[in-house]
Length: 376
Ligand code: IPM
Ligand code: MN
Image (cartoon, rainbow, N blue to C red):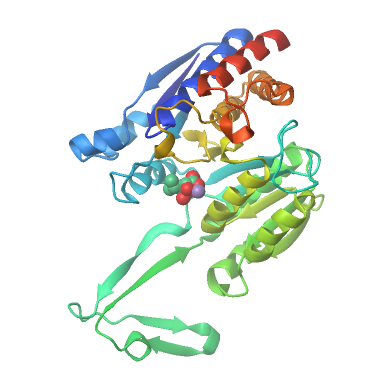
């Protein structure tokens, strides 16, 4: 018996999470275990009513669960950042979900926008570092008309100390934001990546960064990677720049196996990854703390313009549900969902608009449920 927290959230969140819950429930029934879902109304509506995103009590409440199933967060009525940071990032950070697992896999029956690439060509996994880098929220906007503060930046590259005064002589504002990489966090992310690679019979880990222009944080990132990689002589490694990685995702996706990225590049490049695997409607994400509370969600956002229309694709959320069951140790139930999704996609009869069909969101959930029953 598992207790799982459900946060349907904003926009299309409730529509896709309904299908996810439906499918995961059926999988549990077929495999003989129970799930109790406990729903929470965190999101835009609650924020607009009460001014609360997530407070300490909410986080304590969520800490009773091993898994959180999230629809989507974000609403045009709320200034950008408030809900994303106040809910999604807060959960990731509070529960120390240091891995963001984002498989990029072109499923059979889905067409990639990349000409000539099929299911055999696009099958890799991005492991996005999930708690550091430029996401730590440390920085400031300084108004020189009002604040006298002067920022001194030590620029090691040119061996000089840059005084903002001489760099920027106006009376306007300037802003800075800091990226952080700690040895300890990088080490556990890389260990996870190498262990994942072994466990899944994969062979190569590619490290992504921009150590050529951001040498402090990504230099350390590389050092730690080299150190950890020595414990895994059976796995080959390489280091790539983020810009080149973007190019290769499009040009040679078959080249990739397991790809480790810092938070911000990981954010950007996994949207690209989702596109080459057939679209945002198909890409799941797992925010994982292997020893704590983890959160599973579709990679996509709340798509407010489609809200309530029941036309979006719930497969990303359904696959996130499968990932959640795998995390909970219910491997067969997880596999059953994946197999059913693949069969439904292969048959191609039930498809939402993003895949060229006109099925409703709930029809996809129903089709996956029926397929699970027949596969069992
Ligand atoms: C994602 C999203 C989030 C991120 C937002 C909602 C905070 O874009 O999960 O990729 O930037 O990580
Ligand atoms: Mn993103």
